[in-house]
Image (tube, rainbow, N blue to C red):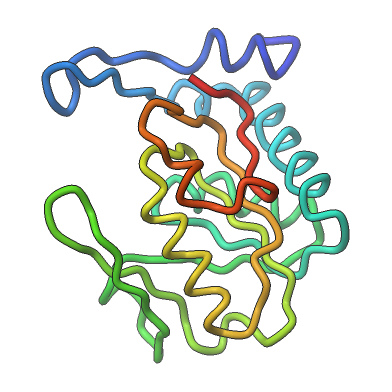
Length: 179
């Protein structure tokens, strides 16, 4: 059982070499999710980091599909905020707002329900890993289009070599661990 967040991240995030492609080192958070103390420490870390970066109240937490749902929901509960899922196109049943963004080979769309955020809502965005930053930048744009304000973006892991930080507002981005 880890006794600190650093120990949890050191021992419970597993590296998978050559997945999904040769030369890629995948950072697998599933052992962290499976460990009750590691999960508790991670949620507490994300909550504190989001609170610090936001510098004020947070009305809603937006979790990015899919592991952002897992981390974002308990963060929302800890903050006394609502939770909003940001999903791939076509996965939400009611009317949605969407933003299309570029991927390395093609494009994708991320959506939220039209009634999920209201103008002026202060929003914390949560995800597991920041890689290229495309999805998180699209979610920030989507939030801003609703009139809500993305006040902080937090992730468990940041893969700095992929340059995601450069696509986002640096002053409102935080990671529990940077590789």
